[in-house]
Every structure is written in structure tokens, then in C-alpha cells.
Image (cartoon, rainbow, N blue to C red; front, side, top):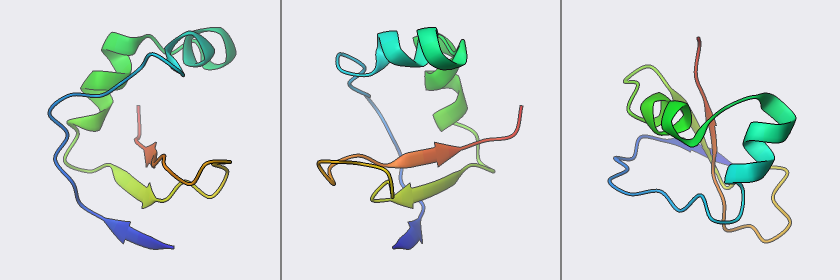
Amino acid sequence: MHYACYVFDDLDWSHRGEYMEAKHGISVALANDAVSDANRVLVDPDYNSESGRTVRIIVYS
């Protein structure tokens, strides 16, 4: 696992958007705002990802 600094232009929420809203109360708009936070922590790949193709983004709110 490594920590990285990426720039995200377009995120695909088609698989996890509804889950984030239901489980965490985080809307897609709020999640998109969070990824633009300069102080975010990005874990690539997400240590809980089954596919290994996702990243985990941690922000302070």
C-alpha cells in the first residue's frame, strides 16, 4: 500500500453512489467535493476492495 496524490476529473459513482448515500449519508455531490480537498488522504488501492481497482479517499469534514 502506498499513499498518493492524484487529481480526479471525473469519478464513476455508478457502482457505489447509492451505497455511500444509504450507509454513510454521503451524497455524490458531497463526495465529489471531498475529492477536490487538497488535504485529503488517498489510499491506493483501497485495503477493503475486493477487486483491487478502487481507491479510498479520507477527508476531514
